[in-house]
Image (cartoon, rainbow, N blue to C red; front, side):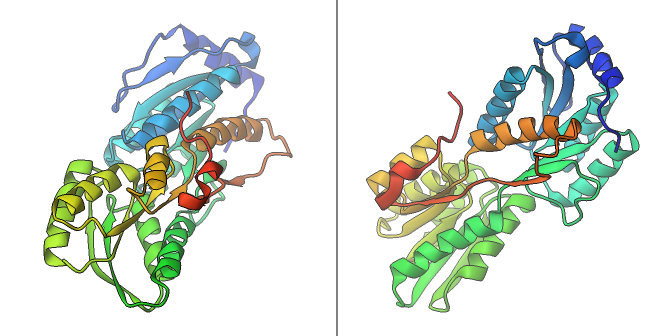
Length: 320
C-alpha cells in the first residue's frame, strides 16, 4: 500500500481535463478547486441505487468538493463482478485511493488484492473485513448491533409474551446477513422467527414476500425489515391483508422513515446516517493518506434506535 505523494497528486491533477467517466456502473467526475500540486483523486465505487446509496453518493460528492478533491464514481448495481470491473477502471485512472461500498464482503478479497497490486489503498464504508491489514480504513456501521437494537425493542414491547416474528431480509451478502444475524441472535426466547425471506432491497419484491408471509402466518406479531424502503412496501401488504396490528421494525433513519415512526406506521428504526458515513469516508481517507495521526483507521458511525419517544434525536440522514 503506497502513501500519497505530491507526484501522485500531480498525476491526479492531469486527469481533471476528463469531464466525465463512463464506468461499468455509470460514473462521474467532480473537479476539486485547490492548487494542482495539492489535489487528491478519489474513486468511489457504490454498491447499488437504493435511497441509502443515493444519499451516500451525494454526501461523498459534497464532502469531496469541500475538501478540494477530485472524485470519480461508479455504481456496481449489487453485482460483485461489476464491482471488480469498476475497481479496475478506477485503478486505470490512477486514483490516490478507492472508497468502496461493497455489494458483498466475500467479493472484497479480490477487490483489495487487485487494488493492492496496483498500489492503491481501499477505504471501506459500512462494513469492515475480518483482516484490516490491507485496508486503509473504514467508516463502519455495526450492522450486527443495528439488528440487536431492533430485537431489543421487540423484547421490551413483547414483555415476555410468546410472539411470532417474520424477517424480510435484503439481498444475500454483506449488509443483510449481518443485520439479520444480529437481529436473530438478540431475540428473546419468547420470540419465534416463523418466516425469513429475502426482499432483495427491492420494495416490489418485499411486498410480494410480505403478502405470502402474512398468508402463511396470519398470527404474525412483528416483522423485521432490512431497510425502510422495503418496510413501507411490507406495511402496505400487511395493511391490505387486514394485518394492521403487525409491528414493523427496520433500519436507516431516513426522513420518511422517521416520519413513519412518528405516525405509528413503523414502530422503530435504527438511524445510521448516510450523510455521516460519506463525510467520514472522504475526510478519513484524505487524512489517512496524509498519515494524519489524529485519524482513526476504524471510525464507528453512531447508531440511534428511534421510536415515538425520541424522534427528535434522529440524525440528519441525507444531505440537502
